Length: 168
Ligand code: FES
Image 1 (spheres, protein in one colour):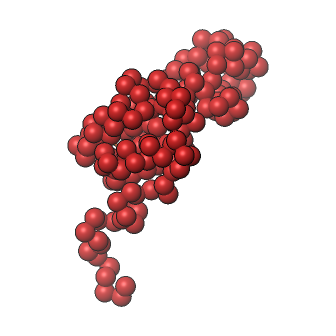
Image 2 (tube, rainbow, N blue to C red; image 1 turned 30 degrees about the horizontal axis):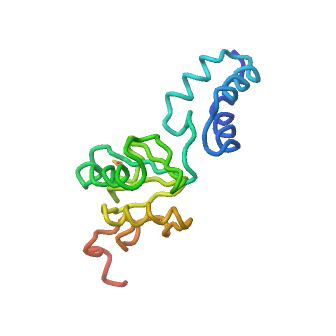
């Protein structure tokens, strides 16, 4: 078996990066040819992982986590806000805001749920109001600082930490 094939994922990532964050079928075919493998093998990988976009996405690409911890903490309202501000259906491009959104599985920031990923950054501890404010800011090219949007540091308890206070 050829070691070349282990380059499939990095090449898909590069193709996406070079093409406004999405991978056209022509790039999948070129990767398959370059690695001496079949088109379908590359396609299977590209469709398995949500990190690969196979259709154009907005300059501001919002991925909303709707897995259980985020769902319990209100990701449904974040999805409703996406539908209200960005587009009724996920994957649809909003030309005015240069943005699109999709639902994804756990992004590994459950402790600060609910959260979204916008391009490469995480925006956590969201409310529907805060999400609306962020999405509306796309029009002016404005994004808040990434991380918790509630003001807490990292994933400290919302009522401040309760341990290791003696010598603080
Ligand atoms: S469940 Fe949303 S980040 Fe894990």
